[in-house]
Length: 346
Image 1: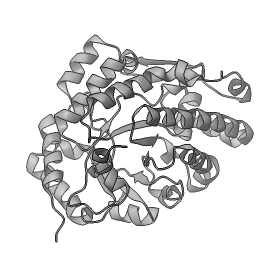
Image 2: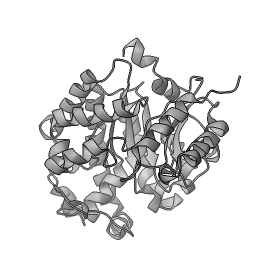
Image 3: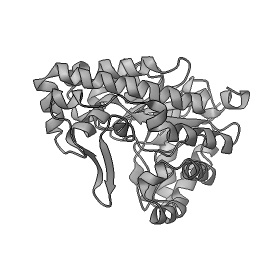
């Protein structure tokens, strides 16, 4: 790792080094709120964009440069690895992702094919290599993947879900099949994240978008051991961010995942969440809808969060979820400027 990268505010915050102001990057900072992204999406289907290394580089680099954030995150999709198992991934306008055929029993797991990382997902690694070359030398690049529970849920439900009925039916009725599926996912995603690191990512984020549907007991039994295995599989010394939504009841257990940074959503108090996690760095957690507020109110809310947590080492300023479509770009720029202008009291 070059000295410029090693001394970047983002990586220093991951190490909990004291900083005058926290670094900031934003989930979905390359997204539909940007005019240039919308224009590209009108010409190129989403999955085609994800699989074109040149477009991945263009979208990732443009967002980071346009916003002036302290880290870039590779433009990709957390569901791409399901194709490596032989499932079919599609995106229909207005309907979100669909995964077929869905897994519903042990026999379906047995029919999954053995992934070939380079053959199945090599376009992701090439996109990272090209993006790393295009980014400023001192700007970290974040790779990412879906967490075992969230990825398994998509594979089982076949898409979005309100109740996760099929997922919970499988884990309750056949824990052996559930653990077999999770083991296969951990092996694939561990290799996938390490290949992203080898291609040029300085940190990785594990998205557990759906894990908040679990009770604390179910999280402890059916999700936590597999997250721990995945985090342990990542190359030592590389920061791992673990992010989930609606995880307020799970925070003390999330502190045991082994991730050096935990991202939290806006439904929890940042400092209370940090204390519940118990160690490491934290990322979050401004409500994404605050970016629709009048500029003065947005700045007031950001400064209030900065005044509460900004002088505590190990905080990465982010939203509590991704930037929403139709978010005013000028407000995003104002948020980044506000965070960068804030100084810890002496």
